[in-house]
Image 1 (cartoon, helix red, strand yellow):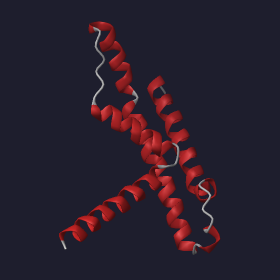
Image 2 (tube, rainbow, N blue to C red; image 1 turned 90 degrees about the vertical axis):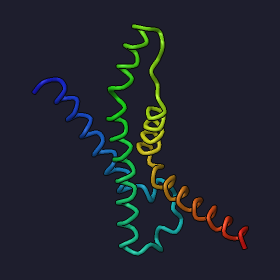
Image 3 (tube, rainbow, N blue to C red; image 1 turned 180 degrees about the horizontal axis):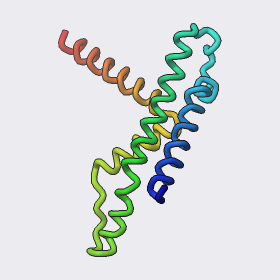
Image 4 (cartoon, helix red, strand yellow; image 1 turned 120 degrees about the horizontal axis):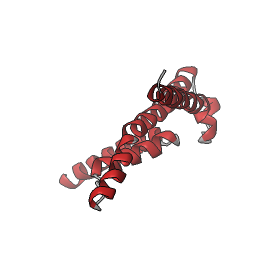
Length: 125
């Protein structure tokens, strides 16, 4: 097994371990006061949602990892860093995903969009 395979295996196991952790313990970590009132299906949904949010963050990090190395090499060659909007968005996705906040962020954005549409509809009346 060459170095790249070892890195991929280590990265994958780390991502899976922490994603399972956030999936299993996300309700307790994010202090959901009404966690005891959740039905078993809602608890499983929240576990899945937290697991998926974390794994998406790890995938974003995996996509981002080769890019900084190339940016450093380009900067050394011509003195200008090659940082794009997609790099910044991937970093944001990685950070909120790996720290467990992607599900909360997505729900907040979706609810905010709904509120904006409702306000626009109310103004048109």
